[in-house]
Structures are given as C-alpha cells and as structure tokens.
Length: 375
Image (cartoon, rainbow, N blue to C red; front, side, top):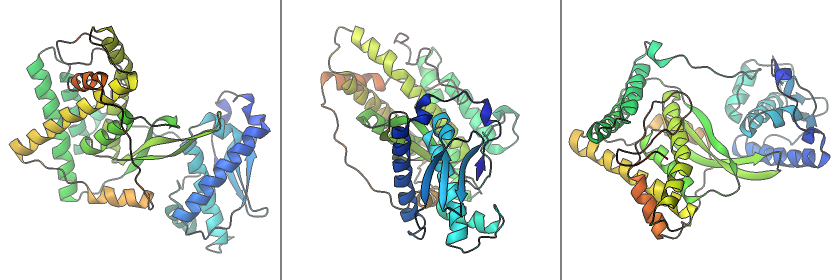
C-alpha cells in the first residue's frame, strides 16, 4: 500500500473521478500496463488480479490478498502525472509478487522479500510518495557539484554580447561536461542513476522532438526512450520522452530540453515576420533542431580534434538502461519535406546558444547569438 501524507491538501479533482466511462477506460489502461510489466519484468509469473478504481484521498494504491485486487485511487490518477500512477501500480504488484510468487504472505510489508520484488518489477519500494529536493550546488562540497556549478557559470557567460566570448563559453561548458563524464566512467566511481519524463503525453511525436531526444542522448550524457504514456482525462494513449542518467546529468538535460522547447514559438514568429518566410511551422521546427544538432556535433568534433576527448558511452548507464527496458524496440521515422522553411530553420538552429544556467525553469530572454533580435 502507498499512502500520500497530506494528499487532502490537493485541490478537489474534476468530476471525472465519478465518470464510470472514464473509470472503465482507466482500468483497461492499467490492465495493459500490468500485463506489460508482468511480461517484461516478472516473466508472466503473476496471475492477473482484479483492478479497481478507489475513492481514497490518502491511499494512492493497495493490494488486497483476500480479494486478489489492486486498487488505484481516482484522486491519484487525476492529481499526479501518469508515470507516478504507474510507479504505484508496480509497487502494488510487488506486494502481490511477495505473497503469490515468493509464497510469503506473512512477510513484513516492506521487508527484504518486498525489496527483492521491487527490484524485479522496477518499483519504488518507499511506502510513501514524497517529492525530492536538491540542495544548492554552490553550497556543496562534492566534486561533481563543483563541476556542475562551473558549467552553470559558463552557460550563463554564453549569453555574452561578445560573439567570441559567447562561443568560447559554450565550448568550455561542453568540454567540462565531456571531461567530467569521461572521468566518472574511466575511474568507475560509484554513481546513482535515475529517470525523468520530459514534456507531456502525445499521440504523435514530431520530427523535431525526435531530434531533440537525439541531441540530449548524444551531447548531454543521458539515454532516452519514447515510452508509452496516457492522458487519463482525455482517455488518450500516447508517448512521452523519458531520460535516464545520473542526477546531475538529468538536471542539465532537463534544462536543455525546456530551454529549447521554449525557443520554438519566439523563433517561429520571428521567421514568419521575415520577408523570406516559407514553409509550415513543423517544417521550420524540424530544421531548427537539425541546425542545433549540427552545431553541437561540430563542437564535439572540435573537442575531439583539439583535446582528444571522445565519449564512447557509459557501460554502467547502458546496463541500467537495459535493466529498465529489457525489451526495447526501434521504430522508423518519416521526416518532413525539406522545404525552404526547413532550411531556414537549420540556419536559425545553428545560431542557438544555450545559456543561463541549469537551475529553475528555462525562460527565453534573448536566446540567439549577437546579431539576432529577441524573440
């Protein structure tokens, strides 16, 4: 069972909680995820239980061995992201696993057998959901946080009105990120990995979004996957970008994601105001991200040629990724037409400089290299 201290402080969710059509749809979707986890993680050793939607505001989920039922709170579904609902589902599946697969109905609720079941089902073992908090980087004595603070300073300098200074600051930030992650992998220091979901569930992923995912994986030391998600209010399945990596690399990658996504509308509006404006928004954005990708690729090539810094990936991160996604499959992508709008986007994308630091929300306040106006 997972409890949420203070859950009653959340605003009352919409009347959708009492909508029988939506509740039936939620159960079907939870069943789909249950079957996937049972197949991917538990080798189909779990016997499917009854799935129910409850009305508790204090219990996120509960496994009842007497009735063989897993209950998920409607308030939980309407008040929290879908991935946290799935965390709760796997947590309750772990309780079921202890009783019905390990055959330990009298085991302590969150003892060693339960911890073992959580590892199998990739579940969060904590009995209470509580938001995490990060201390200030500049107050930390850890080497990795000092490095990240330096990267933050360099990204801020990348907003300099001096074009040479801005470009050099961005290059140095990339150098620090690359060198730090090389040291971590080569020295085999102990490190923790986590996952985050970026953006919201979408039924259709555009080419520029795929390109941004590749940028994060190729240049910011995380591994990415477009994983299944769900919008419970609209009863619409979709996919969402999920990244895996160390906490500090997740911070940087999430900042870059938000920063770039915030650029879309200002740069598109600026393009529309130009005399040479052509093509659709989707074509322009596909070109914009491709241009940014080309710029970062060129910077990485310079670091390789000048300093011999080459990132070949982190075996420990790859192992963690395979642990999370043992049955990953690839999909094909059909890109947008390469119109004048696409090529204009490529040109603008090569002008993007990511700056301002890695803490807090990314806000666009003049994001291009000198010579371009604010969006």
